[in-house]
Length: 326
Image (cartoon, rainbow, N blue to C red; front, side, top):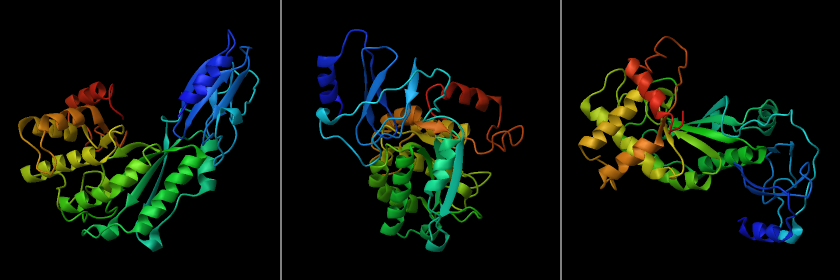
């Protein structure tokens, strides 16, 4: 995308000028400096809802969303004054705002532009979007209207300049989640192209699907406080299916350290039980590097409501999150 722009800029760059490349959650921008170190021209393609900061200041680039340049000759520059005091919120870090919605028409709450703009102005760059698929927990296909409504949410997040922490679940008030793992596989197969289409807006997918709130707790089929051998194997199978469906550049967050350790152990000892899982070693390696962690009960009590069963869980989390998302 940026190679033609950069090749043109190389022919006009003066000594001492600054040239940088900024990758945002929305688009790719080429940063080309003028001759003076206190000025910087910025060119964007397709989207410009990012702020760029370097040693002498930051700028809100133009034009707006929906506008673009067809070639280098159309690129417009913007000069800005030094500003070393202002801060740039990191687009993939920080506290998120949580918004959930039910899949049924009368309980669907779309993301609102005014809300997102307000959160953005306060420094938020992440939204935890939790989609409850309660009308489809018996295996009904997800309707096109639902996928289109989720498309609208992702488009709005992109336009505002935010990213999404994504989760799917089947219930928020009972243990009646998906009636079996086949339901989850069916919906994941449906969601695969949707996830690929919006991968540039998604920061991470939380494993979800299982249990109340998609927290992997409170499930009639997958177990609650204690689990049978079959239920633990089914959880492993769901985790592998997630890794197969979610775009490979994205990570999948698991609810507790115990679950990730159990998944890795099972993949080390025996093959998983789902289609296309014919190379267990490869999926174990994928699980190691792509299964991250999330904690919905941070500081709720001394164990974070069972997140940590023992000190070994905390030590494992501290070590593992040097490489995976938390």
